[in-house]
Image (cartoon, rainbow, N blue to C red):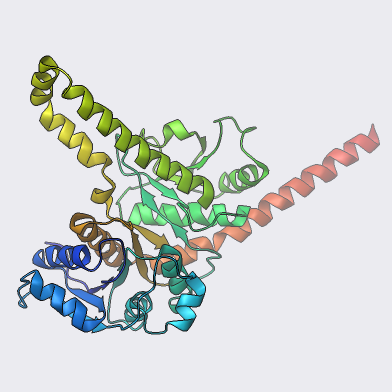
Length: 359
C-alpha cells in the first residue's frame, strides 16, 4: 500500500459537474484510503455528501469557503476580491501544511493565478508550467507547457525542460528521461529563434537531450519529456483529444454498420476497450502545475467522478515524490546555460570577425 500523506484539498465547487461529480470522486478516492478535505460552502457540500450516502467513517473533511470563482470571472481579480473562494482556500491549506496538494476542476486561470499568489514560485522558477501526461504507445511521456504560458522566452523553455526531467524521474520513475523540444522538423536548422536558442543551451545541460521532435513523435513513446510553449502545447493537446474522440466515434459507427462488422467487433471488444481507456483523458485525471512551491493539480473542467478520483491520485503521487525543492534547484541552472551559450556565440563571432580582417 502507498505511504500515507496529508489530506488532498479538493475544490468542491470547480468544474461543469460540481459539486456532484467532485464529491463522488472524493468518496471514491477516500474509499481507497486517501484523506480528502472538500473545500466549498459547507452546508451545500455536506448536503451532497449526505445525498451520496457517504459514510462518515471515510477520511473526508469539509472546510468552509463561502465564495465561488465562476468560469467567466477574471482570474486575478477573483483571487484578490473573493478572499474566501474555494480555490484560494484549498491552496492556503497547502501553504499552511494542512494539505499535501490542491486539486481543482474550476477556472484554470484563477487556479494558476491563485497558486502564484498563495504558494509562490519554487526557487528560481520564472513561470510555472502545466504538465500533461500523454497517452503514448509506450511509456508515459510528459508535455509542458500545456497552456499556462502563451508567450515564452528561451529561459522559460530551458526551465520547462529541467523541471520536466525532475518530474519524470521522481514521480514517473523514469531512470534517465529523454528530453526533446517540439518543432516542425528534426533537423537543427528547423524551429524558430526561440527553439534554436533553447536547444543550444539544452545541448550542454547534461540532460539526455534528443534535440527536436515533431508532432508525429508525441505518442510514439520515444521521448519522455516534450518541451514547448503553452500556445503550441495546448493546441497539440486539444488536437489529440479531439482526434481520439473522432476515431472512437468512427470506429463505433464502422463496427455497427453490418452484421459481419458487429460480429468482428464482438471478437475484439476487449482490445478496443483497452485502447479506449489508454486514450481517455479521464484516466489521466489532471495536469500538475510545475514550478509553484507546493503540489497543485488542474483537473479538466468536464471531469466526472472517475476523472476527479484520478486527479486526486495524481496529486497524491506528486506529494509523495516531494520534488518541489529539486524542481526549484533544477530551474536555477537555466540562466547559466543560456549565459554560456551567449558567451560561446559572442566568442565565435569575434573569432569570425578576426579571421575576416586577417584575410
